[in-house]
Length: 87
Image 1 (cartoon, rainbow, N blue to C red):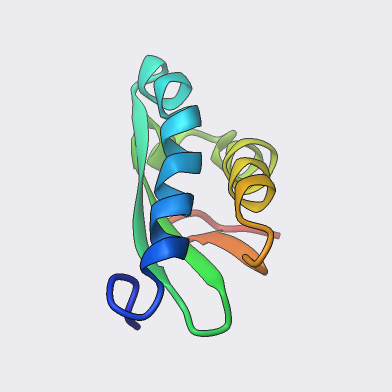
Image 2: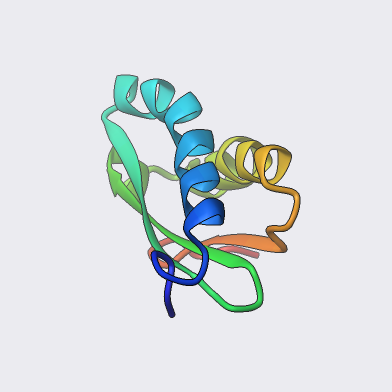
């Protein structure tokens, strides 16, 4: 993993996408943190605060977080939360 040295432009664009939705997450008592961006362009995130325990977090991840990231950074092939069970 090397999110800062090999993919600085990608990391910055993913962070910018997250900044656009962070106010909504924070309003509900949550947040999100990038854990890594893999070599095969998968973003692994950690949902924080209320987002990490909310029963709707899988939907928030797919409909909100992943959509925002993939719209801003089409190179990203997937977005996963390390602390949310996804189907």
